[in-house]
Structure formats: C-alpha cells, structure tokens
Image (cartoon, rainbow, N blue to C red; front, side):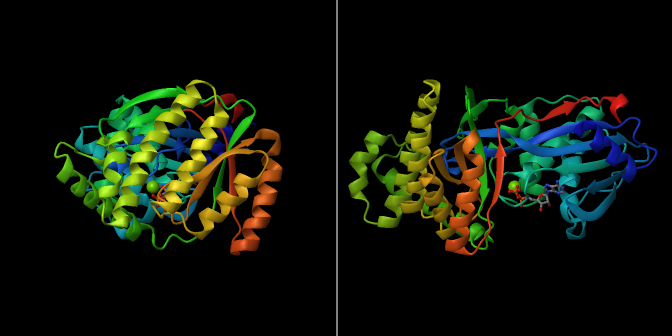
Length: 396
Ligand code: ADP
Ligand code: MG
C-alpha cells in the first residue's frame, strides 16, 4: 500500500465520513547549505528543499469550522472561522494554521471550514523549518481548496507574515521561499536584499544529504541571535562613516573589506563583519563550484563556513563543534557545517551514500562520548517544493 493511501486512510479514522473529498498536499522542510547569518545582512543564502516534510490531508466542511489533528501533537484543535481568528496560547500548535486562515481571509479567500490532518517527518524546533512547512502546506492547501491559485512568492510572503505578525517570530523569507520554489536536485541561490534568485542544479550523484540534530536545548538562541543582529548594525554604522552609501554589510566587497578591516578598534565588531563579508564571498564561490560540478570544492566551502561561524561569528558552541570535528574526520564526508541560527540545532553534511551507515554509527559514538548527548540523523535528498499529491482512490 502506498504512503499516500495510508495517510488518507488514517484521515478517515480521525474524521469518519468525510474522506471522500479529501485532498493531499505536501510541503518540504528546508536546509541551508551555505550562507549563514547573511540573510538579515542583505546577503546570499543557498537553501534547498529536502525530501522530509509535512503532509496535510484536508476535506471541506460547510459550517465554517476547522478541525485540526496532528500526528506529532496530541492536542486536537477546533476553531470557528466565522468568528475573529485571534492568537490564543491554549491553541498551541493550532495557531500556525489559524494564522494562515487569518492571512487568507484578509486577502479574500473564502473560508467554509475543513477537517485537517497533518503528518510530518520533520523534527520540530530543530531548524529544518517545520513551522514554515506547516504554514506553506496550509496556505497552499486551503487556497487550492477554495479554487484560488497563488504563485509561490505570494504564498511565501503570506506565510512569512503569519510567522512575523501572528506568531511574533522575527524571521526572514528564506524558509518559505525555499519551500515555495524548491525543485528536486536543485538549490536556490537567493539574494536576500532583493529576493532575486536562481535555481542551481545540485547533482549529488552517489552522495546524500545527512542532517544531524545535536539535540541540545537551545536556551540562548533567541537572545544571542538578537545580540548578533545588533552587533552587525553597529559594525555597519562604523563602516558607513567611511562609506556613507553602504546600505547593508553585504554591500562591502572583499577588496573593500581588506582596506577597512584594520581600521576597526572593536575586535568583536570586526569579526562579526568579517564573517558576513567572507560568507557572502564563500556562497558565490560555492555556487560557482557546483556549476562546474565540483562537489568536493563545494564541500570545502561548507567547512570554511563553519570555521568562520565558530571563530568570527561565535554561534556554534561545543555540541555543533564536536559534531563538525567528528563528521569532518569521517572518510565518507566531503562537506559539513552547522546550519540554521546555531547554539544547537543541526549540522548538514554531504556523505557518500554507501558510507551513511558507518557515518552515523561513528559520529554518534564519538559525539555521545564527548557531550553525553545522543544525536539524531536524517538522511535525505534535495526535493520538490510545496505541491498537491494525487490520491489514488483504489489504493485506499
Ligand atoms: P522549526 O521551524 O525550526 O521546526 P519552530 O519552533 O519555528 O521550529 O516551529 C515548530 C512549531 O511548529 C511546533 O512547535 C508546532 O507548534 C508547529 N509545527 C510544526 N510541525 C507541525 C506538525 N506536523 N503538526 C503540528 N504542529 C507543527
Ligand atoms: Mg521555524
């Protein structure tokens, strides 16, 4: 029996009598291959949609109510879309689809009600953007159900607004963008200042993407993230005294940086700026390497990116650095780095397919010995963006 059919079958057990018209949608998670902490500095990022993600089975109702079940969370959520859709703490994870309904309502999509089941292969809170996946799958699914077709950029912006305004999370557009425009065996070379992008072939051949979760509690993540943003603003202000036309740190070329680097009196600000400027350069060189089908070269830029995030930007920490060292030392691994904001979360590695088992075994043993934590691994490929999956009824 296909996975598609089993999910729809499970939907029928949660919502007996309403599976005839059920439709199935999928949104992937995303992983950023290189270009970290550059997004809010107007720089380059290079994410890819992955084959892990969130399915949504949805069947229409006519009474204006929404009934949500998630196989990852025990609380069932119900809401009435004929009443104001407001954030409520007790709605827990249900605030994500609720925020999407509210955004859709504001752009005139009719909300007649639905029964909804979510099921995900993504870990949540680990930096693979399960929140953008549930947002994008919901926005796409509910609008298609209403017969409204949005382009990926409109969907991405709608979902970003939900995270920023409804959930109160200060995040950029990269995640939703990668999920909206994702294409199998491609990654998105995105310029965050302008949202200009190019889809670049990512030919992995007999290599796999391996994501490793440190499983570290990320207690410092938000405060340190805000601290880094402020440091970048201060570094930019210092450089604007030399060159008033600079709008972001990413406007500084590597050649300009070499002239100005020694003028910094504050060593911390100097290192923060150096990370951003050299990271933009690395992303461009890493993309150029891929365009020449030089995956090994690409992998080297990933490792330099980690070193810069560790030494100049100081967002790695013991767990990520331990994983990095263990992974880099494995003979099947040609590229590895932390991915996401840091202070915990995940690493992304490129590993020879027939070495992925020994990679997991050896890295887990060393990491556990050194940190006392047990890592989790996700082996995946670059995958397609948000989409509808046809349900083959005969299979159910
Ligand atoms: P990340 O996006 O890095 O995975 P976030 O903290 O931004 O982490 O988002 C995680 C939250 O998104 C979860 O706590 C939950 O509220 C919601 N969420 C994600 N996936 C699902 C799912 N499959 N079912 C229900 N809620 C989900
Ligand atoms: Mg998130």
